[in-house]
Length: 243
Image 1 (tube, helix red, strand yellow):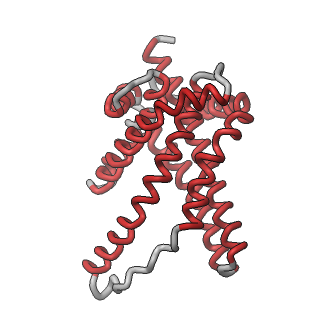
Image 2 (cartoon, helix red, strand yellow):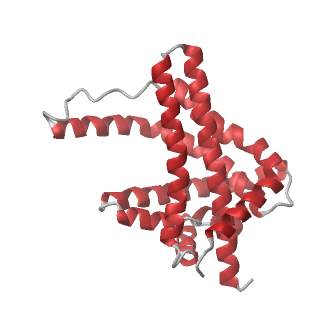
């Protein structure tokens, strides 16, 4: 089945209108506060001490050290976000549940979802190292791993990825570029916010406002992406089952 992006975005919009009040009760503690707190508590990335034009290898090694130092805070943010993401998937895929029931159902699945998200991101990164295209392809093929894990109560992250590979056959590029468009749109806004901070100075109040704005944009993009993933999953899973 070839997916219709217009129909999927319409489905995602309908999900938002139907559940937005509950979405906005669950999302901020898990999708806004962690990146906001992380930005406030983590020092700004250091500039590599080596000039890339004079010593490219040393500059690359310094950049890798900077990236490695950011991994712990990234994993903490991802783990907390996985709880909120699992709850939102539960909310969107099982709409009869209340917020309390949604959170109770989501907590036991959050670790599995975290491991699934981690597996997808590692695969995506490794694919990017292989001349970029394999990473984009894998991103599209694994696009509905999270919804599949929650909706079908899969207990193995790799099985969730495999289920996504099955469902997305023939639609990988469409899903990849739609997902990347959402991600790049959010990152473009965050970059503009960062430029505003650079022009306005480094006062603590202004810095907090800028970080809050960036975290709000990140949360909004994540909600849009989750709605889109759930709408994709429902369409693809329905077509496979003949409904």
